Structures are given as C-alpha cells and as structure tokens.
Image 1 (cartoon, rainbow, N blue to C red):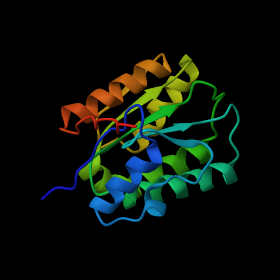
Image 2: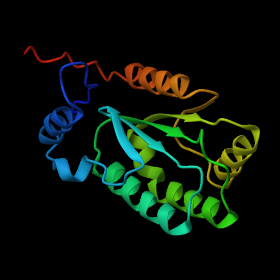
Image 3: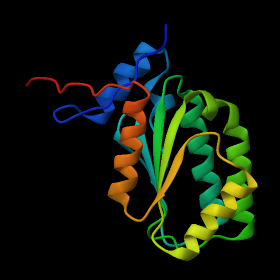
Image 4: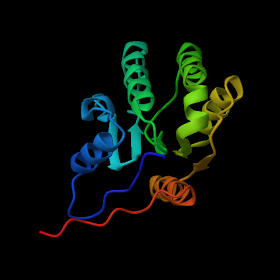
Length: 172
C-alpha cells in the first residue's frame, strides 16, 4: 500500500500535516521538516526553496545537505518550488555542486518527485538553470516560469495529477 500524501489547507498548520503524514509512513517529523532558513513548507508535501540574491559556497553546501535530508526522508509523492527570483547568479563551482546533488537524488526523485516549478526572474538566471539541468538532466517534470505564483500553481497541479488529494481543514 502506498503511503498517503496530501496538501494542507486553511485551518491546519503545515506542522500538523507533516506530523500526520510522517506518522503514516513511519518517518519522524524531524526527518521531514526542513531546517535550512531558505526552505519552507508551502502546503505539505509542497516545499519551496527561496534563494537570496547572493549565495556563498558554504551556504549552498548547507542548503543542499538539508534538501537531500528532507527528500530522502520522503517516501510518498512530493513537489518543489524553486524561487530564483532574487538570485543574481551562481559560480561554476556552485552549478557543479547543484548538479552533483541532483545526481545523488536521481533515483529517489525518479520515484517520488512529481514536479518542480522553477521561478526565474531574468534571462541570465534562465541560462544558469539550463546549464545546471544540462549537466544533470532532471528525472522529474519541471516548468520554468516568470512568476512565483505560476511556479507554485504548476507544482500544485503536478501533485494533483499524481493523485495527491487536497486534505480538508480541521473544524475548530
């Protein structure tokens, strides 16, 4: 039997939904809850990583470690939104680090990641995203968008298309 996945809605916190789903799949909440400040839970199991304007190698290393920890803890469908709207650029070393992380996650993402919506605010960053995906082609569906809202909407649709139902809010 597949583990359930669902989207939290109004009246229920993301923490409550993470706890319910983690319990259902015998994963601890601490395993699934992101600890890096750039990662947030939009509506479980929809995560978002929002990059700042400038990224150091050390900060990227910590981010990738937490992203991998969270994803490897998931055993049911999930989606991501990657917000590159404020990012000014990355170095060749950082693109290599991201490509290597994608390779480590490849088989896990093939099984569980139903999609990634990528918000890219400018043409330079679209080229960066293309370079990263060229070095390590994603095994999941993705869409590059011009707005954050469009990326989030696309990722929600990817979850629904893979049978992840919207969870009803708890009555208060």
